[in-house]
Length: 89
Image 1: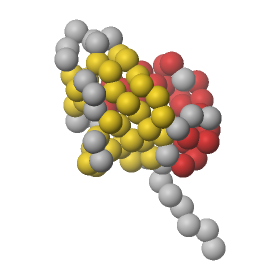
Image 2 (image 1 turned 90 degrees about the horizontal axis):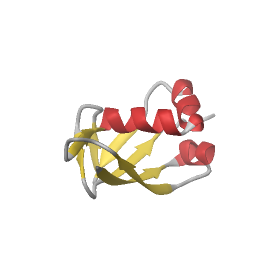
Image 3 (image 1 turned 90 degrees about the vertical axis):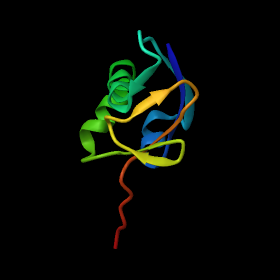
């Protein structure tokens, strides 16, 4: 099992009605990938799946460092998920 803290930023936090939570994912490994975390969130949070289908990409940070879906997460990591920020005019 891998336990990470997930922080949602901007419109993603608004859509979920949640800014931060601890997620526990059962795994035979001591690490999981960012892609596995996103898949888990899509399966367990209907609003997350809906939101993800409406944005072209999402920025992911692990312990304040930019990450990709293939990067691994380990116990205690802090993951930040942030949709693109748009400027209007």
